[in-house]
Length: 137
Image (cartoon, rainbow, N blue to C red; front, side, top):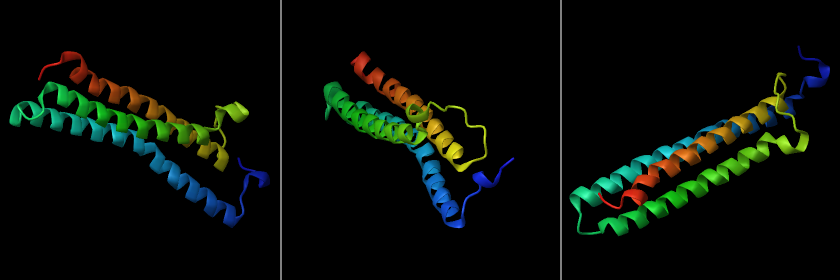
């Protein structure tokens, strides 16, 4: 149940909807970066190993994938930092979002985006590991 204290004025409601809309986009940034990194890594590897094996070599491929991984991890970390700030856990140590209030929804979206960023970070590292550990095509 919502009481009078939980209700927002129309201008506050519009601001809240705009913030939640940007939070929804924040949810998909890290997994999208991971997916693009995955596709680009495999495409570059297939081109370097099958089509143009003499052009780059394994060392060049490792550096290209390393640079691509660095960019992807930087984007994921930036998203994680922004979602961590939105989650606002350290300020009030409130990790339970059980009320239908805009603050709880906003913090929950930050929490979900942060966890997706953690999973995406791990996935991106695991995509790049074979190129660095095997040393062959």
